Amino acid sequence: MAQRLSRRKMAGFVADKLQNGASAQVAMKEVAAYLVESGRTRELELLVRDIEDMLAGHGVVVADVTTAYPLSAGVKAEVAKLVGAKQLQMREQVDPTVLGGIRVEVPGKRFDGTIRRKLLALKTKQL
Image (cartoon, rainbow, N blue to C red; front, side):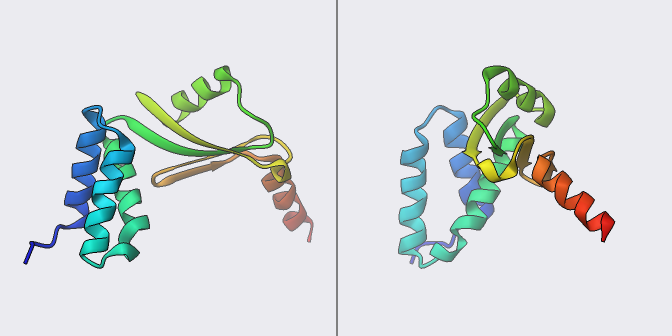
């Protein structure tokens, strides 16, 4: 019977592969196969979070960015500076319901500068 690997070891394995230029798709397929084989598929979201944490420790930050409109190259550079990333991987989501501004989520931190959040904050203060 194969030894059970901790999530931390699996996350380290994937982070190291990605840092050394391996394809993210190939690395994730290997880990997914292990999770299926060992019956641990429920840990996938936690594992992804662990991988992102490890990458952030090496200056590679994965950020979820939500805006009302697509970002320009200049704004993307400002986001990279804001999160202190040597290398930034962005998952962009355009959501017109935020009205304007930007929401940035990185492992362990969240910045919400959207107009929607500000309007909701004003509404709650007036009640």
